[in-house]
Image 1 (cartoon, rainbow, N blue to C red):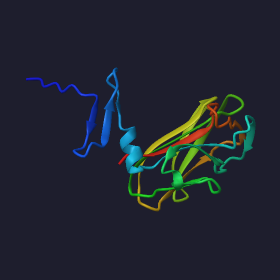
Image 2 (image 1 turned 90 degrees about the horizontal axis):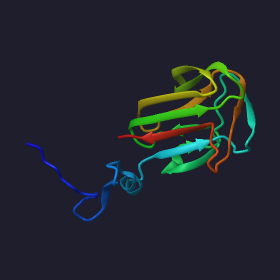
Image 3 (image 1 turned 180 degrees about the vertical axis):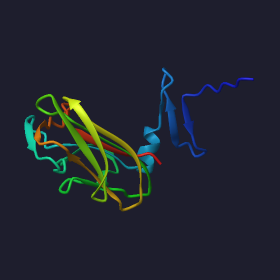
Image 4 (image 1 turned 60 degrees about the vertical axis):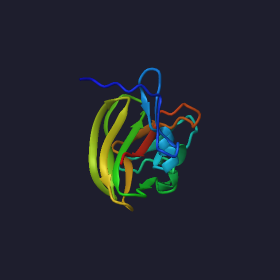
Length: 167
């Protein structure tokens, strides 16, 4: 037997919205995340719309918070994220080099290499779902000296990072 529940919003008993379902059937928990202050941050490099030279092994200078809620975990001086609560985090970075290349992006936890993803072409990416304890730090480092486009904060983001608390 199949049961069908037709609703557009799911709320708790006090009326606080938890989930929304749009006309295409996509589920969004954005209101819940904002209400609970769950950590999510999108960061980018300086925003000068120019290529910036980075040296192999250098921490990527994501010094501009572009979007998010509860973004205080990102340090715009050290380019590190400090987990405010223990749990699983989605950690993603994308870099646009000035030419086709073979390189890598490192993802570090507590300044120790956790992963290194090799790439070729014009898009360097890394994606990690990891468990972090409260107080753990993470950062992204570049694997190959080159110039990378930093874009700007008004939608022209070609080199950016995102860290989201999943639970």
